[in-house]
Image (tube, rainbow, N blue to C red):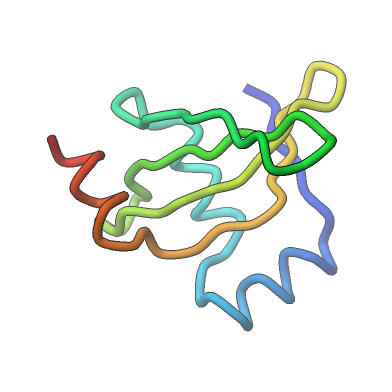
Length: 87
């Protein structure tokens, strides 16, 4: 799976949310992750809820660009997202 992101956006995201896009990419590779469609933007986006390599449950917003996944943002999952993932 080819996963990419904007380096400046990744730095800003890590400062704001404490989650690196490298860790977020683990969620896209998690076979147990849950993917929801995010219809709140003109561009087709998705939210993946899953585990990273460090045991955290993360929420990752991403899109497809060509044949590549493009991470837009990532943060620690909130309570309802963790519950959905852990069910």
